[in-house]
Length: 249
Image 1 (tube, rainbow, N blue to C red):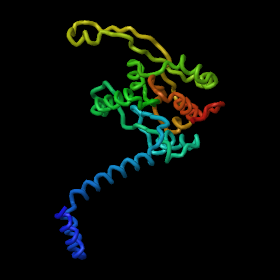
Image 2: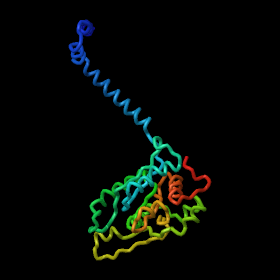
Image 3: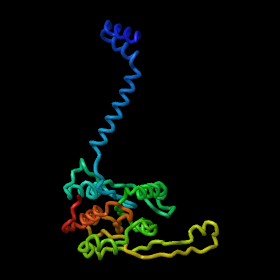
Image 4: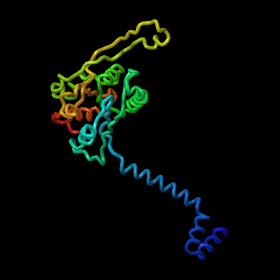
């Protein structure tokens, strides 16, 4: 290629800044493409080597946690299980609020919180919920939580016996006429429901008791969680309960 030969001869005669400007003028496009490719490669490698194994996803709903409680609910659990935080993570969702009370100061956050909660449940990115009574009602009624009287005895009968006094009952709405009410305001609301133990009152646990809450904080396991073994270990951690075979792998 005559043009390439001329450029190469010119390049040999140039020095210093002039040479750099010449290279940039004639080779900036391939250099730019090379730069983009190197950036993409570096990004992929960084993501690969810094990715952490998701041990558990926990949400605080209508629960304000201070720094000490967040530490206890997050990194301290990893330490308790001897899990390296550079290779493992516990995702703690905070700032989530659910309420139907329009006078509640947190009502403006409800829609955004509801959308985030639905998204993480649908994506199987939520395993455990710590919540107040109002949020507990919402999660239970919508069928988002495990019925613990069925789940816990099979998972760990000893733990089930230990926390049985703290089990909290709630209802799930199997069907109702909510849609009918949209078109007929004169109709009366009615629903078919079942009652199960969907929550655990954590008031007896040291971590929650020391936080000084004025109302109970309930523990629930999300019904489509793919990490129920880890959720069970988390419950044992909160109760400082140890039994064989409880370590997270």
